Length: 475
Image (tube, rainbow, N blue to C red):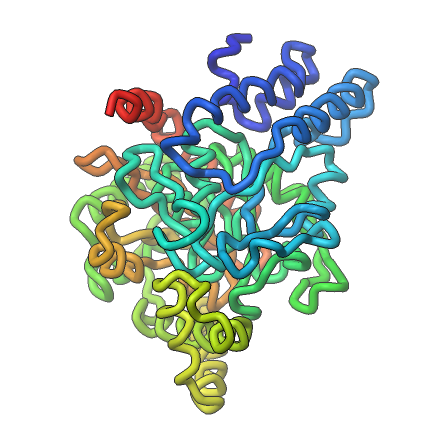
């Protein structure tokens, strides 16, 4: 195999190469470490990376695979870990000064599942502070950068995950999603991000932002890799009170089935009426709908509750529940938070119990309304971000564009949602579409995404990160 291109292999391709004895885990890990050394100074994707530790894990994976003890398609595959997820013996910083000495006593459940599948946990990745405050420049670690243009925002809060995947530093990564924090960087960095059904993946050992909104899910450069990863991550955990007791595995069963026969509901009013999108986003979404129709799907316009209504109720939960998590530290150590984090979290202090109860009542109504639409369609197509990424150092534009999104509704309702690239702006920045499915119907979400992926070339495009790294060195 061409050792210069190993960094662009998908997990499925890596697994096949291992099986054919054309590649070893040690070769792959060495290639990725060399690329990280070259590009990390411009990207800031990692908070911590133990090179010797991952090489040791790669050697062990290689021994097992060569002995015929392959544990599955992720065996020997490096997986980046958002630094809000515990790895036993490592510090989980949450990208914050508050947690610089927060050593994890045990693996998070998702880490245990990855280890059981033979995957290699590969470093701790940058995020927005406590998954809410960013991009911030007044923290112990710099914010991650967008590989398509390092002067632009990579999305958040799983920013390091999106950056690492789009730059070819890793084939798979974990993210968390409370108001879109998997799907935002996935879309902004031009990769695939899947927020599963609420409760499908255990949150035990993952620092909370908002208890009733938090999701854990995979990010990758292909739909197939997202499905393979979900097969490993999903499953009931009796020690997570939000976990669902549902059967799992085989989420990629329909990846080859295509779009023919799918009933797609296009939620146009999100981006045309509720919060009008940038024109380039509107054009890209229309084109995505036409692709699915050409591939044999029926596409009809559908009406959901207003994006403003859905997003407003989600925000009440996020503010109230995040305040509950952080109230003591905000009182005792307010100066140890980034200014942006502190400002966002403080909003929860001004909500009443009545606000929360009324939001809960409205949440049930809104969830029922979304479920009702699924009586007539199999999948929803809608916007992800309503604007291409802005400059990372333009605080006013970050503040303006960040809430302009259609992701938060499905944290509120719990439906599975996947974001993937569907266009490039004139400035050369990714634009994304979102596919949303019925509760626990990740298989159909992945089917629609795979059909779209095969019918387009967006997944073959690479961020021009090497050119930017060379330009950075010249500067």
